[in-house]
Length: 326
Image 1 (cartoon, rainbow, N blue to C red):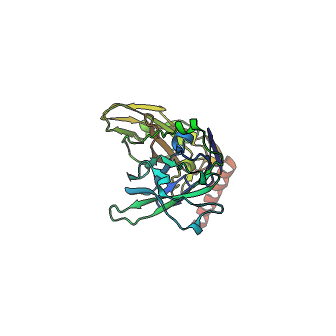
Image 2 (spheres, rainbow, N blue to C red; image 1 turned 45 degrees about the horizontal axis):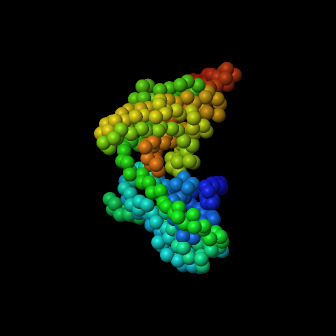
Image 3 (cartoon, rainbow, N blue to C red; image 1 turned 120 degrees about the vertical axis):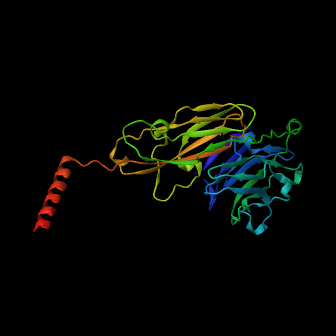
Protein backbone atom coordinates (compact mmCIF):
# COMPACT_ATOMS: atom_id res chain seq x y z
CA UNK A 1 0.00 0.00 0.00
CA UNK A 2 1.39 3.43 -0.94
CA UNK A 3 0.51 6.62 0.92
CA UNK A 4 1.18 10.07 -0.52
CA UNK A 5 1.21 13.04 1.83
CA UNK A 6 1.95 16.63 0.89
CA UNK A 7 2.75 19.69 2.95
CA UNK A 8 4.03 22.96 1.50
CA UNK A 9 7.03 22.01 -0.64
CA UNK A 10 7.41 18.63 1.01
CA UNK A 11 6.24 15.32 -0.41
CA UNK A 12 6.49 12.09 1.54
CA UNK A 13 5.87 8.63 0.11
CA UNK A 14 5.45 5.81 2.62
CA UNK A 15 6.51 3.10 0.21
CA UNK A 16 6.13 0.03 2.39
CA UNK A 17 3.24 -0.67 4.73
CA UNK A 18 5.35 -1.85 7.63
CA UNK A 19 8.58 -3.33 8.83
CA UNK A 20 8.55 -5.98 11.50
CA UNK A 21 10.55 -8.42 13.54
CA UNK A 22 9.65 -10.68 16.44
CA UNK A 23 8.02 -8.55 19.15
CA UNK A 24 8.80 -5.25 17.41
CA UNK A 25 6.87 -3.60 14.59
CA UNK A 26 6.73 -0.21 12.86
CA UNK A 27 4.69 1.28 9.99
CA UNK A 28 7.76 3.42 9.14
CA UNK A 29 9.33 1.07 6.62
CA UNK A 30 10.67 2.90 3.54
CA UNK A 31 9.88 6.61 3.39
CA UNK A 32 10.79 9.00 0.57
CA UNK A 33 10.96 12.74 1.30
CA UNK A 34 11.08 14.98 -1.78
CA UNK A 35 11.82 18.64 -2.54
CA UNK A 36 13.90 19.35 0.55
CA UNK A 37 15.65 22.73 0.54
CA UNK A 38 19.28 23.18 1.54
CA UNK A 39 19.81 25.18 4.72
CA UNK A 40 16.44 24.10 6.14
CA UNK A 41 15.37 21.97 9.08
CA UNK A 42 12.25 19.81 8.86
CA UNK A 43 10.07 18.00 11.38
CA UNK A 44 8.34 15.02 9.78
CA UNK A 45 5.62 15.21 12.42
CA UNK A 46 4.92 18.91 11.97
CA UNK A 47 4.87 18.87 8.18
CA UNK A 48 3.12 15.60 7.34
CA UNK A 49 2.08 14.06 10.67
CA UNK A 50 4.57 11.23 10.20
CA UNK A 51 6.44 10.51 13.44
CA UNK A 52 8.28 7.24 13.89
CA UNK A 53 6.13 4.72 15.75
CA UNK A 54 7.39 1.41 17.13
CA UNK A 55 5.02 -1.06 18.81
CA UNK A 56 5.91 -3.76 21.32
CA UNK A 57 3.87 -6.70 20.03
CA UNK A 58 5.44 -9.15 22.46
CA UNK A 59 4.28 -10.34 25.86
CA UNK A 60 7.06 -8.79 28.00
CA UNK A 61 8.32 -5.33 28.86
CA UNK A 62 11.21 -4.26 26.64
CA UNK A 63 13.67 -1.39 26.34
CA UNK A 64 13.96 0.29 22.92
CA UNK A 65 16.72 2.46 21.47
CA UNK A 66 16.28 4.35 18.20
CA UNK A 67 19.18 5.88 16.29
CA UNK A 68 20.43 6.70 12.79
CA UNK A 69 23.20 4.36 11.65
CA UNK A 70 25.97 4.28 9.08
CA UNK A 71 25.88 1.68 6.30
CA UNK A 72 28.06 0.83 3.28
CA UNK A 73 27.48 2.90 0.13
CA UNK A 74 26.99 -0.25 -1.95
CA UNK A 75 23.93 -1.09 0.17
CA UNK A 76 22.14 2.19 -0.64
CA UNK A 77 19.11 1.98 -2.88
CA UNK A 78 19.62 2.65 -6.59
CA UNK A 79 20.21 6.34 -7.30
CA UNK A 80 20.98 7.21 -3.66
CA UNK A 81 24.10 7.56 -1.51
CA UNK A 82 24.32 7.43 2.31
CA UNK A 83 23.91 10.78 4.07
CA UNK A 84 27.36 12.37 4.56
CA UNK A 85 26.80 12.78 8.31
CA UNK A 86 24.47 11.23 10.86
CA UNK A 87 23.85 14.82 12.04
CA UNK A 88 21.41 15.18 9.15
CA UNK A 89 18.88 13.05 11.02
CA UNK A 90 18.04 13.51 14.69
CA UNK A 91 15.70 11.31 16.72
CA UNK A 92 13.74 13.53 19.10
CA UNK A 93 13.42 10.90 21.81
CA UNK A 94 15.74 7.94 21.38
CA UNK A 95 15.09 5.58 24.30
CA UNK A 96 11.93 4.02 25.73
CA UNK A 97 10.74 1.32 28.10
CA UNK A 98 7.63 -0.31 26.66
CA UNK A 99 5.09 -2.61 28.24
CA UNK A 100 3.28 -5.07 25.91
CA UNK A 101 0.84 -3.41 23.46
CA UNK A 102 2.45 -0.01 24.02
CA UNK A 103 3.87 2.26 21.38
CA UNK A 104 7.05 4.34 21.30
CA UNK A 105 6.58 7.51 19.26
CA UNK A 106 9.11 10.17 18.37
CA UNK A 107 9.61 12.93 15.84
CA UNK A 108 12.37 12.74 13.22
CA UNK A 109 14.20 16.01 12.58
CA UNK A 110 15.94 16.40 9.20
CA UNK A 111 18.57 19.13 8.78
CA UNK A 112 20.02 19.81 5.33
CA UNK A 113 23.26 21.87 5.34
CA UNK A 114 23.28 25.12 3.39
CA UNK A 115 25.65 23.72 0.76
CA UNK A 116 24.93 24.41 -2.94
CA UNK A 117 26.81 21.24 -3.92
CA UNK A 118 23.86 19.25 -2.49
CA UNK A 119 21.30 20.72 -4.93
CA UNK A 120 19.45 18.08 -6.92
CA UNK A 121 21.11 15.14 -5.13
CA UNK A 122 19.51 12.14 -3.42
CA UNK A 123 20.57 10.64 -0.10
CA UNK A 124 19.49 7.73 2.08
CA UNK A 125 19.43 7.55 5.87
CA UNK A 126 18.76 4.42 7.89
CA UNK A 127 17.18 4.33 11.32
CA UNK A 128 17.70 1.38 13.63
CA UNK A 129 14.97 0.64 16.19
CA UNK A 130 16.24 -2.08 18.50
CA UNK A 131 15.55 -3.69 21.81
CA UNK A 132 18.08 -3.28 24.59
CA UNK A 133 18.94 -5.77 27.30
CA UNK A 134 16.19 -5.97 29.92
CA UNK A 135 15.23 -8.94 32.11
CA UNK A 136 17.86 -11.01 30.30
CA UNK A 137 15.96 -10.97 26.98
CA UNK A 138 17.70 -11.39 23.62
CA UNK A 139 17.87 -8.29 21.44
CA UNK A 140 16.19 -7.73 18.09
CA UNK A 141 15.81 -4.77 15.76
CA UNK A 142 14.23 -3.17 12.69
CA UNK A 143 15.93 -0.94 10.12
CA UNK A 144 13.82 1.76 8.46
CA UNK A 145 14.90 3.60 5.32
CA UNK A 146 14.51 7.37 4.95
CA UNK A 147 15.29 8.65 1.44
CA UNK A 148 15.94 12.36 1.02
CA UNK A 149 15.63 14.14 -2.32
CA UNK A 150 17.18 17.62 -2.36
CA UNK A 151 15.44 20.24 -4.50
CA UNK A 152 17.59 21.55 -7.34
CA UNK A 153 16.41 25.14 -6.65
CA UNK A 154 18.10 27.06 -3.81
CA UNK A 155 15.84 28.44 -1.06
CA UNK A 156 14.90 32.09 -1.11
CA UNK A 157 16.13 34.50 1.58
CA UNK A 158 12.62 34.46 3.07
CA UNK A 159 12.66 30.66 3.29
CA UNK A 160 16.00 30.73 5.05
CA UNK A 161 14.72 33.34 7.52
CA UNK A 162 11.76 31.10 8.34
CA UNK A 163 13.96 28.14 9.20
CA UNK A 164 12.58 26.40 12.29
CA UNK A 165 11.56 23.14 13.85
CA UNK A 166 8.42 22.73 15.89
CA UNK A 167 9.60 20.14 18.39
CA UNK A 168 6.96 18.28 20.42
CA UNK A 169 7.48 15.27 22.62
CA UNK A 170 5.09 12.51 23.56
CA UNK A 171 6.16 12.81 27.19
CA UNK A 172 2.95 12.29 29.16
CA UNK A 173 2.87 8.99 30.99
CA UNK A 174 -0.26 6.88 31.52
CA UNK A 175 -1.26 3.26 32.01
CA UNK A 176 -4.08 1.09 30.71
CA UNK A 177 -5.07 -2.04 32.64
CA UNK A 178 -5.56 -4.79 31.67
CA UNK A 179 -3.80 -4.97 28.32
CA UNK A 180 -6.06 -7.68 26.96
CA UNK A 181 -9.25 -9.61 27.72
CA UNK A 182 -11.35 -12.51 26.48
CA UNK A 183 -15.10 -11.90 26.25
CA UNK A 184 -15.76 -15.61 25.83
CA UNK A 185 -18.76 -16.78 23.81
CA UNK A 186 -20.87 -13.75 22.86
CA UNK A 187 -24.31 -13.71 21.22
CA UNK A 188 -24.74 -12.46 17.67
CA UNK A 189 -27.39 -9.99 16.62
CA UNK A 190 -27.45 -8.45 20.09
CA UNK A 191 -25.66 -5.53 21.78
CA UNK A 192 -23.65 -6.67 24.76
CA UNK A 193 -22.13 -4.25 27.30
CA UNK A 194 -18.90 -5.98 28.22
CA UNK A 195 -18.20 -3.94 31.36
CA UNK A 196 -21.61 -4.60 32.88
CA UNK A 197 -22.35 -8.08 31.52
CA UNK A 198 -18.87 -9.64 31.45
CA UNK A 199 -17.08 -7.53 34.08
CA UNK A 200 -14.52 -6.42 31.49
CA UNK A 201 -13.64 -2.90 32.59
CA UNK A 202 -10.75 -0.87 31.18
CA UNK A 203 -8.89 1.17 33.81
CA UNK A 204 -7.21 4.41 32.70
CA UNK A 205 -4.50 5.49 35.14
CA UNK A 206 -3.29 9.10 35.01
CA UNK A 207 -0.22 9.65 37.24
CA UNK A 208 0.27 13.23 35.99
CA UNK A 209 -0.75 16.29 37.99
CA UNK A 210 -3.04 17.66 35.27
CA UNK A 211 -6.30 16.14 34.04
CA UNK A 212 -6.05 14.29 30.73
CA UNK A 213 -8.59 13.38 28.07
CA UNK A 214 -8.28 9.88 26.64
CA UNK A 215 -9.65 9.05 23.19
CA UNK A 216 -10.91 5.47 22.95
CA UNK A 217 -11.62 3.92 19.56
CA UNK A 218 -11.72 0.57 17.78
CA UNK A 219 -9.11 0.18 15.04
CA UNK A 220 -8.62 -2.30 12.20
CA UNK A 221 -6.02 -4.79 13.37
CA UNK A 222 -3.77 -3.99 10.40
CA UNK A 223 -3.62 -0.33 11.39
CA UNK A 224 -2.32 -1.15 14.86
CA UNK A 225 0.43 -3.46 13.47
CA UNK A 226 -0.36 -5.84 16.36
CA UNK A 227 -0.14 -9.51 15.34
CA UNK A 228 -3.36 -11.50 15.44
CA UNK A 229 -2.94 -14.48 17.84
CA UNK A 230 -2.82 -17.94 16.31
CA UNK A 231 -6.28 -19.47 16.05
CA UNK A 232 -8.03 -16.10 15.84
CA UNK A 233 -8.92 -13.79 12.96
CA UNK A 234 -9.19 -10.00 12.72
CA UNK A 235 -12.78 -8.81 13.15
CA UNK A 236 -14.40 -8.28 9.76
CA UNK A 237 -15.67 -4.89 10.89
CA UNK A 238 -13.87 -3.11 13.76
CA UNK A 239 -16.98 -0.94 14.27
CA UNK A 240 -18.78 -3.92 15.80
CA UNK A 241 -16.79 -2.91 18.88
CA UNK A 242 -17.59 0.58 20.18
CA UNK A 243 -16.40 2.54 23.24
CA UNK A 244 -18.93 3.53 25.88
CA UNK A 245 -17.54 7.06 25.48
CA UNK A 246 -15.32 8.35 22.70
CA UNK A 247 -13.43 10.62 25.11
CA UNK A 248 -12.87 9.87 28.81
CA UNK A 249 -11.57 12.59 31.12
CA UNK A 250 -9.33 11.41 33.98
CA UNK A 251 -8.37 13.86 36.70
CA UNK A 252 -4.74 14.22 37.73
CA UNK A 253 -3.31 11.39 39.86
CA UNK A 254 -6.54 9.44 39.39
CA UNK A 255 -7.99 6.25 37.94
CA UNK A 256 -11.12 6.08 35.79
CA UNK A 257 -13.00 3.12 34.36
CA UNK A 258 -14.52 2.77 30.93
CA UNK A 259 -15.66 -0.06 28.73
CA UNK A 260 -16.73 -1.16 25.28
CA UNK A 261 -19.83 -2.64 23.73
CA UNK A 262 -19.96 -5.43 21.17
CA UNK A 263 -22.62 -5.99 18.53
CA UNK A 264 -21.80 -8.64 15.93
CA UNK A 265 -24.49 -9.01 13.23
CA UNK A 266 -26.32 -12.36 13.13
CA UNK A 267 -25.14 -13.53 9.74
CA UNK A 268 -23.96 -17.02 8.74
CA UNK A 269 -20.42 -15.78 8.02
CA UNK A 270 -20.14 -14.42 11.57
CA UNK A 271 -21.01 -17.66 13.35
CA UNK A 272 -18.49 -20.14 14.67
CA UNK A 273 -15.79 -17.49 14.60
CA UNK A 274 -13.02 -16.41 16.95
CA UNK A 275 -12.68 -12.68 16.39
CA UNK A 276 -9.78 -10.47 17.47
CA UNK A 277 -10.30 -6.73 18.12
CA UNK A 278 -7.94 -3.82 18.83
CA UNK A 279 -8.87 -0.77 20.92
CA UNK A 280 -6.59 2.26 20.66
CA UNK A 281 -6.29 4.57 23.68
CA UNK A 282 -4.42 7.87 23.37
CA UNK A 283 -4.12 11.18 25.22
CA UNK A 284 -5.59 14.11 23.29
CA UNK A 285 -3.32 16.63 25.03
CA UNK A 286 -0.26 15.17 23.32
CA UNK A 287 0.81 16.82 20.07
CA UNK A 288 2.33 13.49 19.01
CA UNK A 289 -0.14 11.02 20.56
CA UNK A 290 1.21 7.84 22.07
CA UNK A 291 -1.17 4.93 21.72
CA UNK A 292 -1.74 1.99 24.02
CA UNK A 293 -3.48 -0.99 22.48
CA UNK A 294 -6.10 -3.03 24.34
CA UNK A 295 -6.61 -6.48 22.78
CA UNK A 296 -9.98 -8.22 22.95
CA UNK A 297 -10.97 -11.73 21.87
CA UNK A 298 -14.56 -12.85 21.35
CA UNK A 299 -16.06 -16.12 20.07
CA UNK A 300 -19.45 -16.52 18.37
CA UNK A 301 -21.91 -19.46 18.46
CA UNK A 302 -21.82 -22.17 15.84
CA UNK A 303 -24.27 -21.85 12.91
CA UNK A 304 -27.85 -22.80 13.72
CA UNK A 305 -29.12 -25.95 12.02
CA UNK A 306 -32.29 -25.75 9.98
CA UNK A 307 -35.24 -28.09 10.63
CA UNK A 308 -34.23 -30.48 7.85
CA UNK A 309 -30.69 -30.84 9.19
CA UNK A 310 -31.95 -31.27 12.77
CA UNK A 311 -34.31 -34.04 11.56
CA UNK A 312 -31.48 -35.84 9.81
CA UNK A 313 -29.32 -35.63 12.95
CA UNK A 314 -32.16 -37.00 15.08
CA UNK A 315 -32.67 -39.92 12.67
CA UNK A 316 -28.95 -40.65 12.64
CA UNK A 317 -28.95 -40.69 16.44
CA UNK A 318 -31.92 -43.07 16.56
CA UNK A 319 -30.28 -45.40 14.04
CA UNK A 320 -27.10 -45.43 16.09
CA UNK A 321 -29.03 -46.40 19.22
CA UNK A 322 -30.74 -49.28 17.37
CA UNK A 323 -27.38 -50.52 16.14
CA UNK A 324 -26.01 -50.42 19.68
CA UNK A 325 -29.04 -52.38 20.96
CA UNK A 326 -28.37 -55.14 18.47
